[in-house]
Image (cartoon, rainbow, N blue to C red; front, side, top):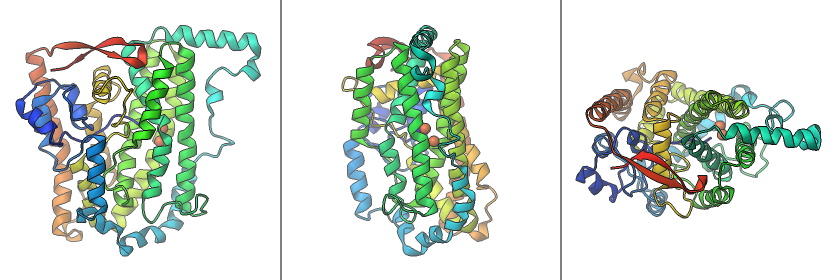
Length: 427
Ligand SMILES: [Fe+2]
Ligand SMILES: [Fe+2]
């Protein structure tokens, strides 16, 4: 799992900044709907303020997030804590045979799954000369990749490499977590099997980037270290309803990001990278299917609970798992990375909206019958269904503004690519 994603600038540090009206551009649609580091990098002041109004929640820096999480644990947020009541969690106990039949089979066993060695030069099978020739070919083809593409690739790789954090996430979901570390329940086996599949993503991208010779591997490794150390922000972390919604969204977003990276690599003649990213994107698609299926089942058996959880997550925004990323040099690394991804078309604000539209359709949110919902459930359904149109309108307005007046470009250095600068829009 990985990719740029969402949350909003609802932290106190961000609000005065948006009120000042720093105007930066559509790139920040992404960062708006992405976790914002509460500093001033990136664009989209006006649009950011507008889209911020679509949500109610708040996220912030790592320290603020930790404080927010503490408040959640203290029970200040009844809206999601009610999902931890035994009656709600019982649903997952009853669903276990269903998960065994409909979710676990989506995993690919090690015997048939691709492995990083299948996609990169292998000394044991090629011999010394063949191996060196294949490595030289990787390096030569990677030389044609634009720096912006490389930054997106490193961002995706770093995100994937923080897998220890992600395996711990579903193991927070009450009712499904792996209680012993080797539990035989369908839910626990899915979590471990999913993690094993994800493990290959960071591995293969890491090895590719090592062979490319285009990046400062020590800085990249330091970033991975920092990211695992920082953890991640995921609202309502212990509720399986909210958690599965979060992961379904993330898997689809990740598939889009890796898929776009594969297409760009092909355009630049790097077929090895195209194959790698294509294989990862296909995995993410399969994972998306699993999590979308689980949430779809929740919508069938508990539509009120499911739609309220969805509205809750969308109000607080789906926060990108790498939102706390830092390389020890750039305080606004995540915002800069998000801006590059937006400009390079690897993951954009429109993608965020399209993921939401897709999930609304998959889960039949618009078709939910009012009689099956509580007052709060009806409000949640209406909020969620109206959200894509609101985001689309804001995108159009931002595009119009940017069309009238070109946004200034500023060179920003990325330590990942040996401090080479990339021009991005910063107010
Ligand atoms: Fe995945
Ligand atoms: Fe992944």
